[in-house]
Image (cartoon, chains in turn purple, cyan):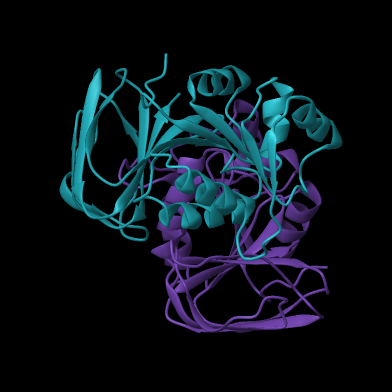
Length: 213
Length: 213
């Protein structure tokens, strides 16, 4: 099914979670599962046992709390006001030496959270490789180009999180040949894969690559 | 109820629409209502008669099309590939001389659309004053500071769409005193109004101000 990093940790936050069958696979293949506060509700509902739940615990249900206690889950109760539960989890994972990170629940629901979370993510893109999942998309956070598998007709979007220069697409219906992608200047939504792989290259910047799950 | 510009046009797009009672008020007070393609479905469902529907018409239902025909709505069928229905609508409104614009349905649903639409919005911030509505928030697109009414305890978020400098808050629980707000550097989510008004000032940049509806 999904191409994932060979070894990664899974972080489950409290936003729009990947579909249950996808979350199950992501958790099964993960080295460890960490939940940020209310993200634990989604894990518990699927009987996924996280290694750690971290946060100020204002979004976890009483039922989830009992589930975690029964399964001996490590509970890190941090009430620092100057970072969110999401950032607390990223700091923990960085400290533990995580290199490849798959995250779900960091987008969706309240739009201010979604936009704020992307801002937080940008502070950690040198520490981890990061792939996000919501109900609709797999989103790779790209700090350099790459080759990606696809099916002809796949809807592909590319959104700049930081301005990217010399962007070149190969294998997409609407090619780019060295343009700049930058918010307010040019976005790359609703492209389409033409075959079983495509390539993106660019210099500088950060691109968010949307693919079907 | 809501503080709105004295005179504005309402644009309804195909994403997450304001609650029906809010959309009704927005439409009643508007000088004109323009729908981008599938946004007309939301208008027709509430028996709001738009002046114009614009787009490639791939998202409008047959029922909505009949409704529009029965009510003599202007139908601008444009199939240009190089802009989205949202941008087609913005171009039309700019051409018609709109100065103040209220938009709903430009966020939510698919995240690549939401992020792409913010990128498009940034191209038009010198042409219109813009206020967005989704189900949860009223979002003012700020290119300069201002004073805003509130209730003590209102959840207020400020997200930089373009880096904003010398940001000063007064009347919010966590004040800023000249800091920079910039994606990846510092975001301003989940603040709180302390009284019946607050002030934001800044130089350069674009801020998205989230307030309860």
